[in-house]
Image (cartoon, rainbow, N blue to C red; front, side, top):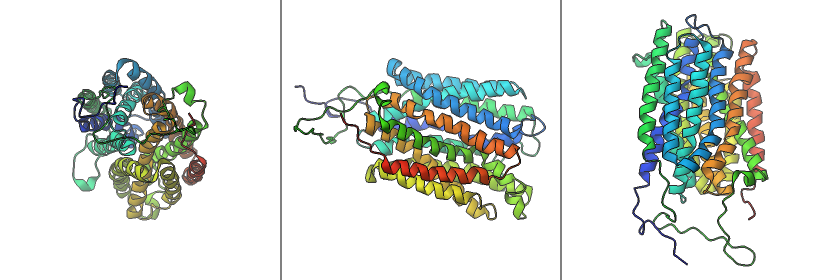
Length: 440
């Protein structure tokens, strides 16, 4: 039998370069979480879109994103990760360039950002995760978090570029004092160009390790069956994975985690600026409410979203994916219930927004690692695309149905936050009964 090769036997690039490329790609893909920076402008007289219409663009992008993760997983297995990451970046950039060239045409903005941009994000998103886990079989949770950390940090960058809080005395791409179609569209165009540059550069290092390679000094524990024979490493294909209860449990938990987090991300500005339940209710001015909303949406939530991906991934490597999932969902359930009551004090609002982002980010480290644990690392890019479809459904239910329609109907935000909190506790219970191991 030919001995398994190690990094001493095969000359390969430094695996941490893959992480750098992954972060560059994910920073661009994180554009979708910067959507709250545009909702106010698109709801102004210059565009005339309703809250539900703006949330529909966001939800369409999320749904398309989720669907195309499956397509991206299949294509990268056939054509290689570099080409698919590159294709995703091109579509994302073109989508925003289209949106920045059509003025107040709602349908074309929906197509550009929601459909074309969302498809680009979905194609490119699974590439750094699948490639990263193959380069880091010894640190699945950590590298899953690092590979997608840029997604959360990207939102921080793009929101600040578009609409920084007035206290920073920085001029953003969008003039909040005088919304115009030309001003907002130019921001979309600048973003489209930057997304193209970042993903093209990052895609150049999206290459799988050579067959038989493993990290220096890492020797995985061999699993034995009842007869004492070494078990073959599990490597389920999607059709096999879909016959397991583990898949549906992971899918259900991710659906709830996505629904809760995306509802806040897509509506944090609308909630903070709400005249009856936001900061103005407690005597703050409209400008102060806007500043608090931007700080919460542009600084606290996205920064901690990025940190949560790294920290929860590392935690799960230490305490196990199952325990990490339970802890994360209990924590998120508490924060979703508390968030509704924070607009009386901006500090409490910032803390709650940060912690919601922190827990939400954990989903994107824990679920790809759990997918690899249960169904094997070999097909994780393909299998995770199926798990990730739950994110697409959550992107529709959370921002549009729970928050957008509730707002347009004049109902309280409590009708969105409290049910989301209860669902997080249900997800924690699913995590409690979840058994990661597949018999093979």
